[in-house]
Image (tube, rainbow, N blue to C red; front, side, top):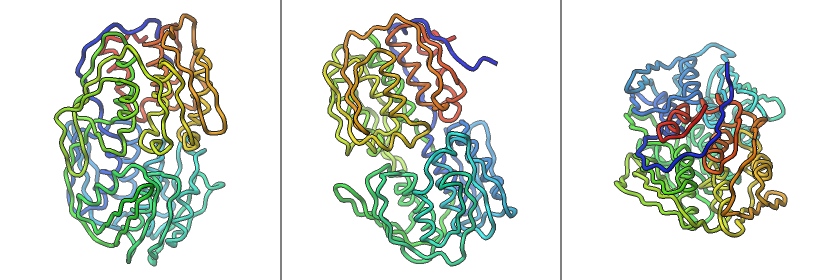
Length: 441
């Protein structure tokens, strides 16, 4: 079976309207909350990817009734703390750090042992960041050097905690929130700014949550053991997936794209703010609030003159999954772009900072890296003629997609391996590229 793709020519000018697959973060959160709600919940436009499908399969192993139809996914929940499974049941989270960390929080008061494992990439990621707070709740966790596989057994006597989450990780925050949901009393969480999908969902479901927002952190208070009813959800398009088509348009000549019904949650739209500073033409239309989330149609036009950007480290949490593609855009900007405190990039599906540095060097872009800070010396005339092979990136889906955008906009002859990596988040990526006019073999 062919496991790579080849791209040997730039994409021609285009003016297209496309639909992006459902948001992965919201798809997984809907599934987890629906599994703990009372009654039948339906999700429309749920992402059909390995990460989401692994979540649904795992919920079935926990005794939850899950049914996937052509137009929707249905979950029949029986309420909090109603998972039914055999002792030492194994849950395979695959490549999804989001699902692995959130399901562990949801199992905080499980009466039997459960084992959480993942693929090679996920098994090398840090889980100490959730083990510590869960231990404080009273959850018994055994691990392999603070990494997967993890064996846990919950407690019937969970105690609420006061905890300071310093990483700015939405996964850690959400894990603690889900554990708090199953705990008597009030848990108080001070957390560095990060994505707030979980908070929005808690508020929409009328769960007892209070949120106090400050400049650099939030205070979240949750009272546990409150049952909630089933709910339907139409999941908007994923802005992280959309970002690659935004970049494709920005770096192509005389091109325009309309991305319909995209989640534009303020904690996720750092890429739009950065690109506007770089003089990219972006317009948001048909903006509405849907069950706590903002969504809109995004209009983007190609840009002749890109301006370098100084990215404040305060922005990092709002664009952590888009930084790779932003680096690529900066490679074509005039001037020096600055990024600081990128350490969290080293804890994704791969060491994305290291990969970004090697990738930019490979295509002839001057860079300077010091610890976790990066400077990119842009070249507006960057035009590639040589042959390039992209491999050894730990099957990181975002590295694969970034490489495709580079090949289609910068030129050269490319061989990009591990095409199956996109199955974790955006299986329709290559199909969508071809609809726009990309020649991908």
